Image (cartoon, rainbow, N blue to C red; front, side):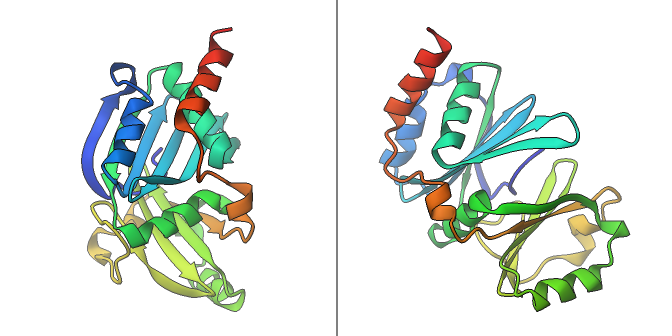
Length: 221
């Protein structure tokens, strides 16, 4: 299950066992890359977000059965991504985004999940929208179905825009005819912005090689 829409695709389906890691991550820094890397294994997905070559966000979500998911952010997520990359087969994607959109990616990675996997066709959408406005909700709604994902970002109860496949940032409008909400099995997650996210999910200034070596030593005692 993808965590984010694809953005502008640079590379996909890269087998990390054939890459020199963390040299590949350092290359993103040297190239002043803005966007995110996705990581996919059999039981989990991860994200590493960059802005102008600096890592500013990381998220790891692992699936433990159908009812429970482990969600890690910041350096803990980076450690788990490194562990999975060095373990089972892992596929990586590279997606470019606008510089000023990365703050939304960081917000997504730091958010608190309030609800997940709510079937859209069974929801009272008008009631949900009224609730978000009344609560002055800040965060995002994550719509997902099979391999499609769309995000709707909110600030103080007002929708800021949509993030969809192929987009490098927020869009003010969405094509209703092709909206993921029309998919029969479309579900929605509600993620509320975490006011302590910068503290809870610290990642800036992390030494990639040091973290990689630490994980390697744990896996190869």
